[in-house]
Amino acid sequence: MTADLSTTAGSLVAQAPAATAPGTGGTAGSLLAADVPSVVQSIDWLAIAPPTLTALAALVVLVADLFLPAHRKRLLGYATLTALAAALAFLIPLRSGDRSTFCVTTGAQACSYTADHFTVVIQALVLGGAFLTVLLSLDDTRKLPAGEYWFLLLASASGAALLPASRDLATLVVALEVASLPAFALVGIKRGDQGSSEAALKFFLSSVVATAVMLLGVSFVYATTGTLHLTEIAARLDDVAPVLDTLAKTGVALTLVGFAFKTAAVPFHFWVPDTYVGAPLPIAAYLSVVGKAVGFSGLILVTVIAFPSYADVWGPALAVLAALTMTVGNVAALRQNAARARSAVRLLAWSSVAQAGYLLVPIAAAAYSSDEQIGSTVAYALMYAVVNLGAFAVAALVARTHPGNRLSDYRGLYATRPLAALALGFFLLCLAGLPPGIIGLFAKVTVFSAAVDAGLGWLAVVMAVNVVIALYYYLQWTAILFRAPDGAPETAGPDTGSPASAAPRRFRVPTPLTTAIVLTSAAGILLSGVPQTVLRFAAVSLF
Image 1 (cartoon, rainbow, N blue to C red):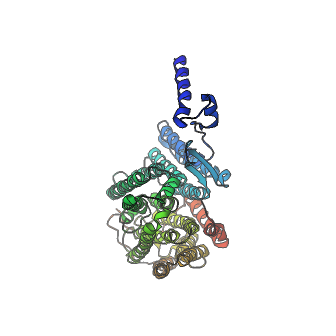
Image 2 (image 1 turned 90 degrees about the vertical axis):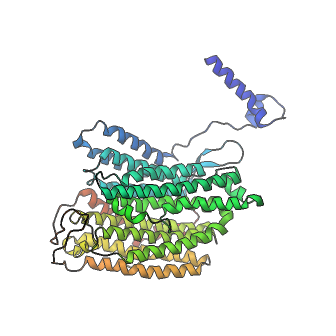
Image 3 (image 1 turned 135 degrees about the horizontal axis):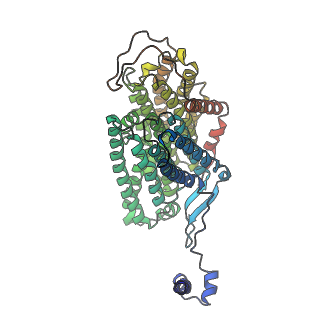
């Protein structure tokens, strides 16, 4: 067998120069050394460490679950926390942002994985969001299958961390599905809960349709260009034959659909309210931040890197989507009934739709100016991730005594949990863009400036109107926190299963939940005190 392998290898080496450089002189050895690049991949393991470590940890947790007794399952949660912390630590040596791997070894230089500044920032957001989700979940998984829960969360986080580094359409699609498929199961993981199962089914079916449309667009783009690498697509779309122009434009438009669904852009937003309400609260928080990061990073990559030649197609489309998304989200949030069960989570869901509209503005602006506008989306996303996860953390705290999680349940929270009330008030003011939430104000100004600089004055006006609309429901919720508690007894919600008591009940807050609130509060205060920490991304090119 060894002789056969040597003979085969020798024949391949002898044939390689002829296939690569026919008609050239010299010996096979000299041609191989001088003209034929090596076909052996050299993998940069440090560059791919964050998503790889997360994926390996998911497999370890799944296997360990088979051997751990029921009373030791909690260790799986701490193992998940440790793995995500380690993955975040591996981002430190990648700060220079100049590493690529899985590159083609023949022809033009094109890589499938690039750890640039954009990748590192989004991976930090994704892994940090997953880390905080674990903190919110540690004391809520007693009624859930722990091994499956942590495995699915880590698997989804690994796909989400892979996506911003992807530089070809095949890897993008795979990363998107790896991030999404476990999320479907996480939404419906509450066994015996009809609302959870319905939310998961709705999320799954709508996502499958969006993915199918996106794959059709990817196939059109490949048929037009003959390549899947984003940089190569951009070069070849510059000179498309007139007969293929319509096919290329259709492919560009359809490819954006899948990512627009993940960002919850209107009209692809209809899954959001029911999914957030039906999912476990930590998973709703995860989808609102990490799920959005997946969609926006994919949208940025395909528009700015792959399709700059067709900015006249996706630029106006994204501008209209931004206007519709922020308007529909804010108007729906404005109409929430404070006495309705799960109204607090539903308001946060519609608020996340509105925030997606703001995040779309700089991407649309990049079609009219430069890709430096993308930094405004990244800066806003970092602010939003911190304060939105903090708001969900306080909602998880309130849900321990008020399972209905109505907005009216937050009345008088300051009297019973003053620090939690102050934290939630701060988070809501950040989302509204009001002091002392300075980072929220500066982030909105940055996005507003991106629209004005790109000549999208009408979009800036729409955004200003929506900011005013959002002020009403954010301030209304903030005011509820500091009102005197209502002495009248409440009636039970239709799906809470037990009556809600107006009398406040004191309990010991779990340490992981307290840690999540403290971390998000500290990060929000730090960003408000030193806003340039994230706003500097709005002034530089991340690619």
